[in-house]
Length: 305
Image 1 (cartoon, rainbow, N blue to C red):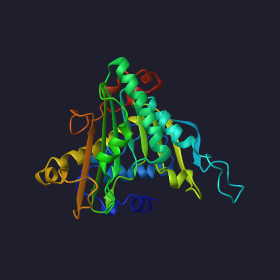
Image 2: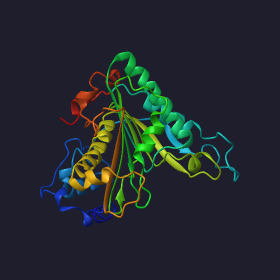
Image 3: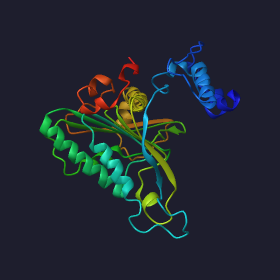
Image 4: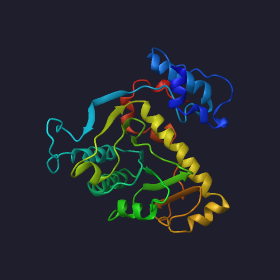
């Protein structure tokens, strides 16, 4: 079993910096399945330095049924009717709308179509909330800078914030990265360290909401697992900041985001509104302590210190 898990996790190709040489045991790794135990053993031995940043043994509750799209069409060979899966972008937008302090959105590529419209509506609600309370709300979007198809972060952030005034404490960042043939492929929405939506769904209207839609699955969770989603995003934002802060990175930053660039590593980031810092803050649990959602987590004492 361990050799299979090692192949799945690509441990034979790992970066040596991820292994300190000492096997780590997560204190929460109790009552795991035999597959869970095998995964934990490999991670604890070969990726121990990434504990609490890229992997963790955590807890959470699955909310509702699995988000399966296209929905209710498996007994028919015909395409779903128009609007059959409009619930998906609506659900994602509603989740973002719950944000009181900190939200992470990660996907392979930026939202379009109804996904973009749902996200714009949710950001408008966050503007209204921040304007009313005076509290800062941070939203970080992270995408993959696929080779040959770079993300135009400036264009994306303009589309997301169109018609939203700049006179509140809502702060938004859009970032993308590539290193060789690796780029972000995670799909998650993490809100205030409590609500998490993750799985396989991209944010593309034509692929999921139109003719001959892609079949995909995602789930909604609630609990400490969401904080690990934020910390996972932290690592990618740290990479973007580190690369753009170099001399070469500062030169690339002056080029148009959408310009293809024959370079092994490419990072881009845009911020909103004018005057916001170039890079977003890192997620730390102190930023969400005042969120009323925290009462929904019953085992906060077990969270990463």
